[in-house]
Image 1 (cartoon, rainbow, N blue to C red):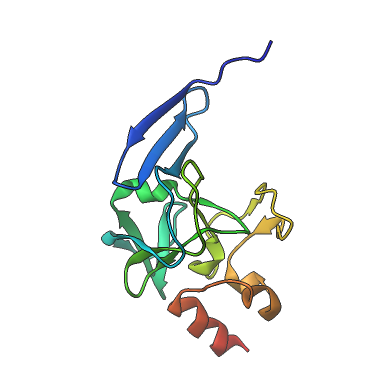
Image 2: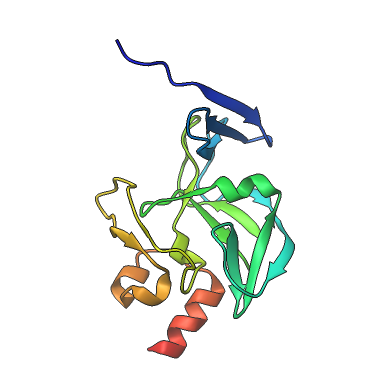
Length: 161
Protein backbone atom coordinates (compact mmCIF):
# COMPACT_ATOMS: atom_id res chain seq x y z
CA UNK A 1 0.00 0.00 0.00
CA UNK A 2 1.29 3.46 -0.98
CA UNK A 3 1.90 5.97 1.78
CA UNK A 4 -0.33 9.02 1.56
CA UNK A 5 1.51 12.23 0.68
CA UNK A 6 0.36 15.13 2.81
CA UNK A 7 0.30 18.34 0.75
CA UNK A 8 -0.60 21.74 2.14
CA UNK A 9 -2.14 24.10 -0.45
CA UNK A 10 -2.41 27.87 -0.36
CA UNK A 11 -3.95 30.08 -3.05
CA UNK A 12 -1.45 32.94 -3.41
CA UNK A 13 -2.69 34.74 -6.54
CA UNK A 14 -5.40 34.54 -9.17
CA UNK A 15 -3.42 32.02 -11.24
CA UNK A 16 -1.13 30.41 -8.63
CA UNK A 17 -1.25 27.97 -5.78
CA UNK A 18 1.65 27.24 -3.42
CA UNK A 19 1.96 23.58 -2.52
CA UNK A 20 4.10 22.31 0.35
CA UNK A 21 4.99 18.70 1.04
CA UNK A 22 4.32 18.46 4.76
CA UNK A 23 7.04 15.85 5.38
CA UNK A 24 9.90 17.71 3.65
CA UNK A 25 8.75 21.31 3.65
CA UNK A 26 9.54 21.46 -0.11
CA UNK A 27 7.44 24.19 -1.73
CA UNK A 28 6.54 24.95 -5.34
CA UNK A 29 4.11 27.04 -7.39
CA UNK A 30 1.39 25.54 -9.57
CA UNK A 31 -1.04 27.00 -12.10
CA UNK A 32 -4.66 27.06 -10.91
CA UNK A 33 -6.02 27.53 -14.44
CA UNK A 34 -4.84 27.08 -18.03
CA UNK A 35 -2.44 29.86 -19.03
CA UNK A 36 -1.57 30.92 -22.57
CA UNK A 37 1.77 31.41 -24.29
CA UNK A 38 3.27 34.91 -23.87
CA UNK A 39 0.75 35.90 -21.19
CA UNK A 40 2.11 38.27 -18.57
CA UNK A 41 1.19 36.26 -15.50
CA UNK A 42 2.23 38.78 -12.90
CA UNK A 43 4.16 41.99 -12.37
CA UNK A 44 6.73 41.69 -9.60
CA UNK A 45 8.95 44.06 -7.66
CA UNK A 46 12.24 44.08 -5.84
CA UNK A 47 11.52 43.95 -2.13
CA UNK A 48 15.24 44.47 -1.60
CA UNK A 49 18.46 44.47 -3.63
CA UNK A 50 21.43 42.43 -2.40
CA UNK A 51 25.06 42.79 -3.55
CA UNK A 52 25.58 39.02 -3.65
CA UNK A 53 23.31 36.21 -4.85
CA UNK A 54 21.34 33.87 -2.65
CA UNK A 55 19.23 30.89 -3.58
CA UNK A 56 16.14 33.11 -3.44
CA UNK A 57 17.29 36.14 -5.48
CA UNK A 58 17.23 36.95 -9.20
CA UNK A 59 20.15 38.76 -10.79
CA UNK A 60 19.16 42.05 -12.36
CA UNK A 61 22.65 43.47 -12.89
CA UNK A 62 26.24 43.36 -11.74
CA UNK A 63 26.06 43.17 -7.93
CA UNK A 64 22.26 43.56 -8.11
CA UNK A 65 20.35 40.54 -6.89
CA UNK A 66 16.69 41.23 -6.20
CA UNK A 67 14.57 39.70 -3.47
CA UNK A 68 11.24 39.03 -5.14
CA UNK A 69 7.98 40.63 -4.13
CA UNK A 70 5.55 38.95 -3.86
CA UNK A 71 7.69 36.56 -1.85
CA UNK A 72 5.89 33.36 -2.96
CA UNK A 73 7.62 33.73 -6.36
CA UNK A 74 10.81 32.40 -4.73
CA UNK A 75 9.18 28.97 -4.96
CA UNK A 76 9.28 28.97 -8.75
CA UNK A 77 11.65 26.05 -9.18
CA UNK A 78 14.17 25.27 -11.92
CA UNK A 79 13.74 23.25 -15.10
CA UNK A 80 15.90 22.84 -18.18
CA UNK A 81 12.55 22.86 -20.03
CA UNK A 82 10.98 25.99 -18.46
CA UNK A 83 7.41 27.19 -18.85
CA UNK A 84 7.87 30.69 -17.37
CA UNK A 85 10.44 33.48 -17.62
CA UNK A 86 11.30 36.27 -15.20
CA UNK A 87 11.79 39.40 -17.30
CA UNK A 88 13.96 41.42 -14.91
CA UNK A 89 13.87 44.50 -17.18
CA UNK A 90 10.07 44.81 -17.36
CA UNK A 91 9.68 43.07 -13.97
CA UNK A 92 7.11 40.61 -15.34
CA UNK A 93 6.62 36.86 -15.11
CA UNK A 94 5.76 35.57 -18.59
CA UNK A 95 4.42 32.23 -19.84
CA UNK A 96 6.91 30.72 -22.31
CA UNK A 97 4.33 28.23 -23.58
CA UNK A 98 0.78 27.13 -22.86
CA UNK A 99 0.59 25.91 -19.26
CA UNK A 100 -2.10 23.50 -18.09
CA UNK A 101 -4.02 23.85 -14.84
CA UNK A 102 -2.15 21.91 -12.14
CA UNK A 103 1.24 22.22 -13.88
CA UNK A 104 4.22 23.35 -11.81
CA UNK A 105 5.65 26.75 -12.78
CA UNK A 106 9.36 26.42 -13.54
CA UNK A 107 12.03 28.69 -14.96
CA UNK A 108 15.56 28.20 -16.24
CA UNK A 109 17.80 29.57 -13.46
CA UNK A 110 20.68 30.56 -15.79
CA UNK A 111 18.22 32.78 -17.68
CA UNK A 112 18.79 35.37 -14.93
CA UNK A 113 21.86 34.10 -13.06
CA UNK A 114 25.36 34.68 -14.40
CA UNK A 115 27.29 32.73 -11.75
CA UNK A 116 25.14 31.10 -9.10
CA UNK A 117 25.94 31.12 -5.39
CA UNK A 118 24.93 27.46 -5.06
CA UNK A 119 25.41 25.07 -7.98
CA UNK A 120 23.22 21.97 -7.90
CA UNK A 121 22.57 18.70 -9.69
CA UNK A 122 19.44 19.09 -11.78
CA UNK A 123 16.75 16.44 -11.50
CA UNK A 124 14.18 18.06 -13.81
CA UNK A 125 13.89 14.96 -15.98
CA UNK A 126 13.83 16.92 -19.24
CA UNK A 127 15.41 15.34 -22.32
CA UNK A 128 17.40 18.61 -22.51
CA UNK A 129 18.59 18.40 -18.89
CA UNK A 130 22.00 20.01 -18.38
CA UNK A 131 22.70 17.85 -15.28
CA UNK A 132 24.54 20.53 -13.26
CA UNK A 133 23.27 24.09 -12.95
CA UNK A 134 25.85 26.77 -12.10
CA UNK A 135 24.75 29.86 -14.03
CA UNK A 136 24.94 31.21 -17.57
CA UNK A 137 28.70 31.79 -17.50
CA UNK A 138 29.20 28.01 -17.39
CA UNK A 139 27.12 27.32 -20.52
CA UNK A 140 28.06 27.37 -24.18
CA UNK A 141 26.63 29.85 -26.65
CA UNK A 142 24.76 26.90 -28.22
CA UNK A 143 23.09 26.04 -24.92
CA UNK A 144 22.21 29.65 -24.15
CA UNK A 145 20.68 30.13 -27.60
CA UNK A 146 17.97 27.59 -26.67
CA UNK A 147 16.57 29.81 -23.91
CA UNK A 148 14.95 33.19 -23.35
CA UNK A 149 17.50 35.15 -21.32
CA UNK A 150 17.39 38.31 -19.23
CA UNK A 151 18.86 41.46 -20.74
CA UNK A 152 21.63 41.32 -18.12
CA UNK A 153 22.68 37.77 -19.11
CA UNK A 154 22.53 38.65 -22.82
CA UNK A 155 24.79 41.69 -22.34
CA UNK A 156 27.17 39.84 -20.03
CA UNK A 157 27.50 36.99 -22.54
CA UNK A 158 28.13 39.42 -25.44
CA UNK A 159 31.01 40.94 -23.47
CA UNK A 160 32.53 37.49 -22.88
CA UNK A 161 32.43 36.29 -26.50
